[in-house]
Image (cartoon, rainbow over all chains, first blue to last red; front, side, top):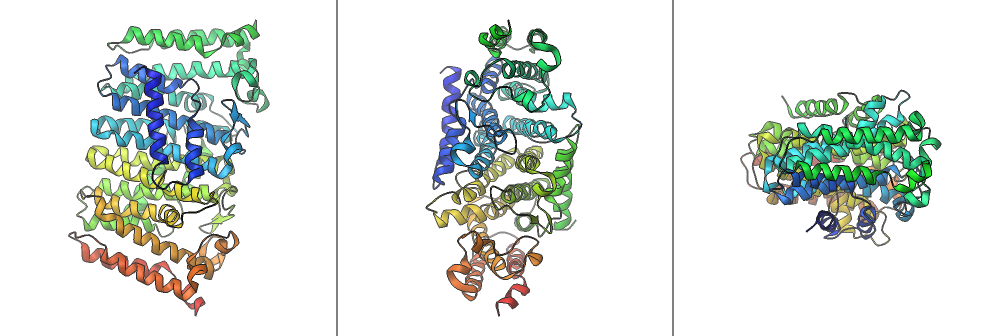
Length: 289
Length: 289
């Protein structure tokens, strides 16, 4: 099975578990709505590539690690789109979840998906209890407070923002989870894999700033120009378009250098290079020229 | 250390972990606001009593099990008080969290506390990885979909409510978590402990209906008369006040019969009896007479 098929199969199974038994039907339906269509699945894809580069000796753990991150990511999109945050009407080209199901179910969908992220890891724990617990620990650190995506979003309610902590938590956290959890699922230490995730997260943030500034809402499947509208810090505002593109290229070179030694290092480097190319669509580069 | 001191110490430590490092200060402060003052801490107290009745041979696991449930409970209070659900202004005698910190931080506080619930269990996992994973599994089942408190709250968005599934998920879930997790933390099987938690949860629901109908907002530290105002199903509406009190007594007798065989069965039975007496304050009984 290729990586994309592994991810979709594992997500489908996790959502079906949440919908099983005597579940409230609308919330059950909202769980599926929140995770489809999948978009690039960039975090779980990165996680599985790292696991494969490290040997992928426990595929059930690798799959669970990958999709646990995606479930948390989807939860954060649902909550961030709600009126008290971005008040976004569209997401992935369809109505945002709270527009389709109402705010109460949007709140509960996010809560249920966060929970499901931890559950999928616990469920495959018998394959290797120590690795599974380490995966749960990392997922927790990169989701909650003080270093996870909750912390990242929390910085937006501060008058004084620690920009470095803000970006590392808001965007970097789940990329760091992806590289570290891919390695841990395959029996490696987490620590050497932090820098790679951190750099890819930084690149992703710059790319997101570029897309927000250069693409239309139709191209993105969500509202454009939100950074400027919400006075959010942005690499484009700071460095200009060309400066931001140069910065993106620098970061990705650093990311490749940061890949720890492992059996599949060359393949992984190639995957990271391809990710860099896909981060900013040609359309955005053309718009900049 | 007595049970209450163990709970407060463990909660304080978990919140301090969430506030550590470079955390956004307002969200860090909101975490503490959400878990204090503690109220009765009825779920973690029950959990620790069960652990003690089963030998409490790994106190770090028992403490983590107990407070993981309380963190999830506090998260649910914060989210349920938000305008899209109960729109409650007061909680535990002070402004509801979204009134004190705003809706964005209320949403993030709930998300962070859910995450913290799983993290505290992962953090003590080295004490016994298999038990820790089983605890995380149970916490997930009783928090998310299809059987957890998220599912319970989700039923309120359905036109057709499955009343039995609704009550078991909304109120029963965290009591079942309390009895099962207390037992698992001390090395026992989870399954025999479900009925005790289920019955205590049922009693708690009836008691809550009685308090909502009979006490003032000041006595409860939160708005009164919400069931009637929101047309929610209630044992008082169904059975009348005296009928609800009789039902409560029947359930609690059944709960005591349901306690599985364990070294501390007699002490636990006494604790359950005391809990029953405390569930409905004398003031409410007087108001009914």
